[in-house]
Length: 336
Image 1: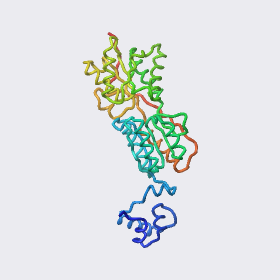
Image 2: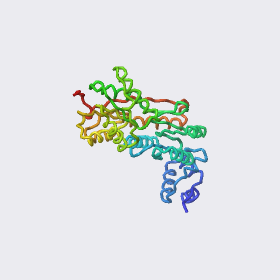
Image 3: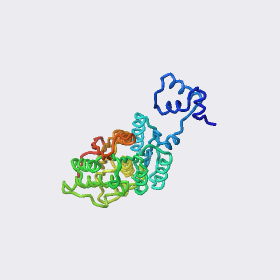
Image 4: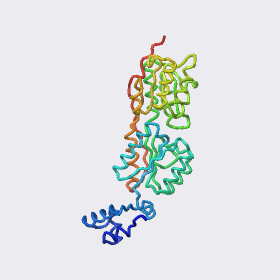
């Protein structure tokens, strides 16, 4: 059987109350006694129960993080940032991968609630806002990243997607491109819609527009992005450039162009969004809109921990700025 707090107290020759104070770092306990109790806990391999702590209203020092796709380097880097910052604050992080599945998302959020985590950070779309409201009513602090839900009172950390889309469109215009395609995961995501809106606005200012048939849904992977781009390249008047709403889709576009025998970037310029590690590994290296990934994770954890500790009352909406990173996948367009 697992050792209990009673076993620790008996082996250490102290009261149960003293062991409890050592575990929770409360009360006046001498360093000698504290070290002795910790030594006994290690010898007995005693682990305090987080659930028991939660049931008594104490912090479990745990944070839940839900992500839509850990295979996407962007979310993997988000996870690393959240975990690192969480540990700096003394919190462990439970990472849940939902695979873009709404049912799996609700299942994980329910599980995190049952485990009595101190707070939840979500990078998923949380399509079930009623379930999220239920968590909020349970006084579970929640922070959203990479997206927002304006109807809910939660902290939000995100990048200015509209500005990022505008930067991408403006960059391609400055290179002389006029026929610009857009690859997007889907149109259900507000971030995607804002990136497209920004790109369209840049073209509109220049007196141009994006034809609806040049906006293709590329799904959530390199492979589906490649398939969508291949369809665009079959058009008689195919695009000279493409703005992909994430780096995975941009890499899919590069693959499709290579399969079609095109020279990059001379025959097709490609701009991505995220600036993950993949942007530097692909050939040619990817011009992309950089999100401050590390800062997004850190700020989300900071806001959540402040609420957990009761150090703030008002919810915050933090919008960080994107940045165009120039590499070799985009170049001037010479119409032939």
